[in-house]
Amino acid sequence: LRLQDDMESSKARFRTLAMLASDWVWEQDAQLRFTYVSRLGEDASDPDAGSVLGRQRWELPGLLPMDWRAHQACLQRRDTFRDFEYSLYQPDGRLRHVTVSGAPFYDAQGQFQGYRGIGRNITAAREAEARLRQSQADAQTMKDRLQAVLDAAVEVAIIATDAQDRVLVFNAGAERMLGYRSREVLGLAPALLGRYRDNTWHGLPLTLTAEADLHAQDASADDGPETLANGTARRRVL
Image (cartoon, rainbow, N blue to C red):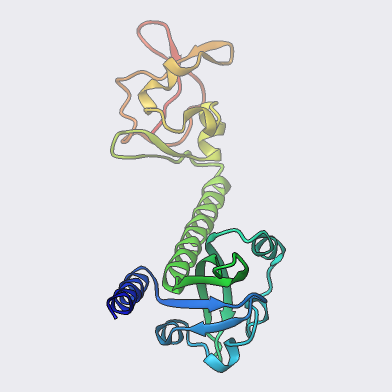
C-alpha cells in the first residue's frame, strides 16, 4: 500500500511539473502513433483529440508542408529530441505554431514502447517575430524611397547629421558639388571632411575648415574655389 501511494505521489509530481513546463503532455506507442494528449493540449492548440489519436505526428490534419526526414531519422535512432517545431492550420483557418520535446521509454525487458513528451504553443512568439520582420522591411522600403528622392535632387546638396553631428545623409547633389562619395563621409563630422581626405578642385587643395558653419550656409555650389587667408581653397557647403 505504501509503495502504491509513493507511485501515485510520483505521478502527481510529474504531471504538475510537466504542466508547469509546457502547455500539454503527449505519448506515442512503438509505432509512433499518438495514444494520449492531455486535455490542456487540446485547449492550447485546438486539435480535436479524435483527429490526433492513432496518427503519427506527420499525419496530423492541417500540417504546413515541411521536410520530416531528419525528425523521422531521429525517432528511428530512439534519440531524445527538444524543441522540434512545426505548424498546422486549425479548423477555423488560423495557423498554429508548436514546439515539442520527447524522449523514448522502454518496458522492463528493455523493449522500446514509444515516446513521451511535452508541447508548447509558440504562436504568439512567432507572430510577434513576423510583425517585427514586416516592420523592419517597411522601414527599409521607406528608407530606400527617401534615398531615391534625395539622390534625384542632383542640383541641391543635402546633408543631414544626427545629434552627435555625424553625417547620416549625403545625397548625389552633395557628391557632385563637394567631390566626396557618400560612403566616404557617412558617420563623419562634416568639419572633419577636409582632414579625412586630401582632395583637389581645379588642381588646388580642397579642405573644409572648422570655422565653416555647416548647418547654416547655402547648399549651392560656388562658381569657383574660395581662397582663404592661408592660401587654401575650399568650396562652400551646408
